[in-house]
Length: 302
Ligand SMILES: [Ca+2]
Image 1 (cartoon, rainbow, N blue to C red):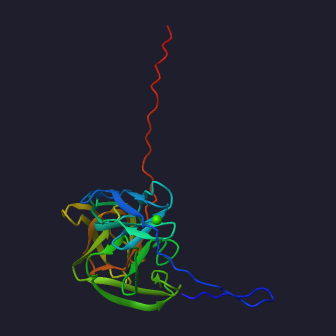
Image 2: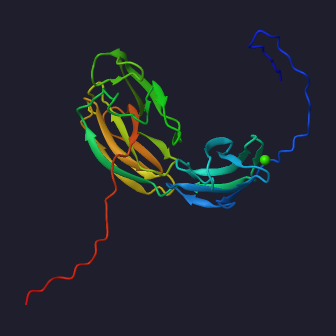
Image 3: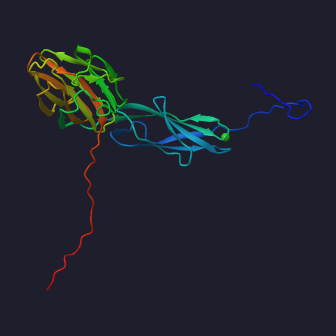
């Protein structure tokens, strides 16, 4: 530490003595009171983390919250509760850190919780033949995986399987059936492929609904037809099957997905099973509204 004393007037800078005393500030104390150790939560949902924080000789300035060493956020006013809104599946170690007005710190004991996913779901929404390879601004707001080119996925999503073999039909083309590159409007035509079928494992770790668009392209117009089957990755139960046809001009098939699913792409006709890209978008569907209304006694006219 360095102290610089600077003269601001015409006289020279002076300092007549420095005295040292023992630090008397007591650090604060903090305990996580909710959730309890070993608690389990079904996603999606907000997890309230509550603490008791106090400082024997001063005031609490703030309480910070951590999960697995990653800072979630902070609370600056009593009762210093924090709402964890984007929790992911798995086991997490929660910790709180309290600071007093002199920034003396204290860490709470850790609390371990487990978040579980709801049952998997796949609901087919629509097919889109008009957008073709012009996906930027139309698909992939939350993330994308472009076969043989680029991957950019959000933290709530993971691909739990190896992708199949990739193949590039054209590395630079003006053909609108070909997907735009991730960073420019130049286009490329590529695909994953296997002779009969391949399966991808998709996990949405936040338990919320998400829109996923799969882009299929039969670049050589080789009469490729496929089936796409979504299943629950845990139980194997089939959730949805679609016939993937008329893909010579490029076509998106769009589903609403939740939880941990697999999708099998299977050849029905043509050379092989193909898939060019996966796009992730927010679920824009609002749940239906229901409200109770007061009962009105019918008026009976005599
Ligand atoms: Ca203190």
